[in-house]
Amino acid sequence: MTPRDKAARLIANPADLGHALGYNDLRADLHGQWIADMVKADHDQTIQAHRGSYKTTCLCIAIALLMIFKRRKNIIFLRKTDNDVAEVVNNVSRILQSDIMREVYHALTGGELAVVKATNTEITTNLYAAPIGAAQLLGVGIGGSLTGKHADIIITDDIVNLRDRISRAEREHTKSIYQELQNVRNPGGRIINTGTPWHKDDAFVLMPEPRRFDCYTTGILTEYQIETLRRSMSPSLFAANYELKHIAEDDALFDTLPPFTDDVTLLRDGIAHIDAAYGGEDFTALTIGKRQGDTLYLYGRLWHKHVDTVLDTCIEEAKRLLCAPILCETNADKGYLAKEIQRRGYSARPYPERMNKHLKISTFLRKWWGNVVFLTGTDKAYQAQILSYTEDAEHDDAPDSAACVARHYDRRGGGEYKSPFEQ
Image 1 (cartoon, rainbow, N blue to C red):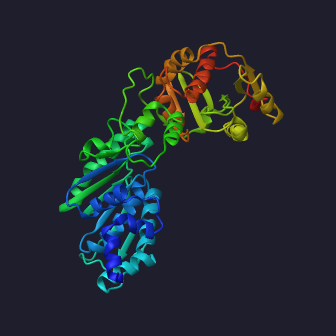
Image 2 (image 1 turned 180 degrees about the horizontal axis):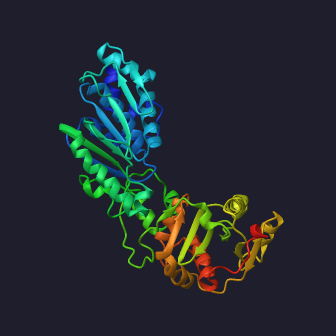
Image 3 (image 1 turned 90 degrees about the horizontal axis):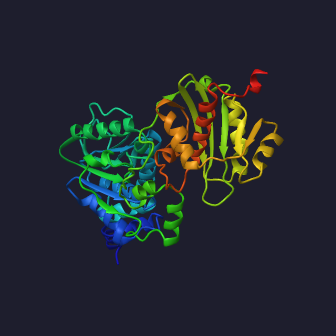
């Protein structure tokens, strides 16, 4: 077989090309087809695939091939943030500059492939034959400006993410950006979309009907891996990210996200609460809160870790916001956590929990939810666990911790404890 035949075979079998580039997990029947469709199709398309399915890897290879074989077309690539964009653009640049791609191109055409410009947002090769002015590949975060930009091929990848699940404002912003793309593409141009759904009303509702590849059909994840993932998140998140469907949560208590503030002084002299995990599938949740009149200011962190591994971080966060004591229940650990906090020189307030968890969440956190303001920096996973909470939720650590802080201030008005920072 001649070098030209070998090169032609790699191009005809994109999964084999991926293997040659070092992406050994790509499969011909799945990933090879995705890459071929992205490169060869002339219509808009949407591919939804579960998380961890290598769809972004396939997209990087497809973009490199488009830049080589669609020399007269320029490409605009969109992801959620500038850092997300840079990750993909840099990967495409590495593929184009690899020995494999340069050898394949030379074997097929006799010419040389070179990258003449490469930054975190732009790539242009020596093959580019479009009118001068626009980069061959331009990467844009959805917070960036598209004004005055035009492209023959527009590619979106993961422009919908967790932020779209927990924030209606984010969903509407993402949808408005996607609608603007209709004015960005040149006549006869096309849009390729890849990603994972997060919400029933996210930007995917504006895209062409997707081809869906869920965790049961790709064969990428084992049964054990699927079950482990299922246990690690709420049913609705698992359904969206791995089954690619939305399940009704008619009994969800919290359907909208509170507003945010950057003012850390609003939590000064508040209290903290730790809902501790001691192994297994539980999460450790930290809630720091302060009531100011009829407003409850909250700051939340969430870790899928044993409390011992994050306790120092919890204490540092409480110190940073000048909040004490740290409340922690004694039912499961017989006072262990409170003693550990005190041993580290910080104020702890142990208490026995006598209230049913769902009753506590549905009574106190539900009551205060319309008057909650989150401090900027609250973990997205913390927010999502509250929004996903139902009586049957597998994980309730964040809403339980937040409910304990809400109960404290609900029963005691301005608060019972005098802050050690005022002493």
